[in-house]
Image 1: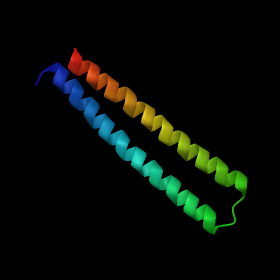
Image 2 (image 1 turned 90 degrees about the horizontal axis):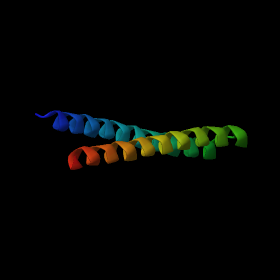
Image 3 (image 1 turned 180 degrees about the vertical axis):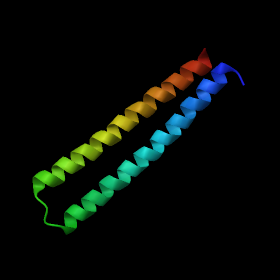
Image 4 (image 1 turned 120 degrees about the vertical axis):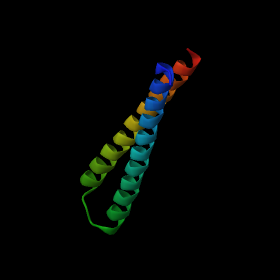
Length: 77
């Protein structure tokens, strides 16, 4: 296996890991909203928790996009 193939495989593995994390964060957000509907939590706490989870989701999406771009660059090289 060439160095290029090895690097691409590592990036693909990292992308898979981040995509799994993304799904986990989405599930947490869904759960948070479900709990918020059932509980009498303050609006500030609900909003703060949701914002943090949404930030995690966006950060993971950005990491995935960058890693996919790097993988494509490696293939094109």
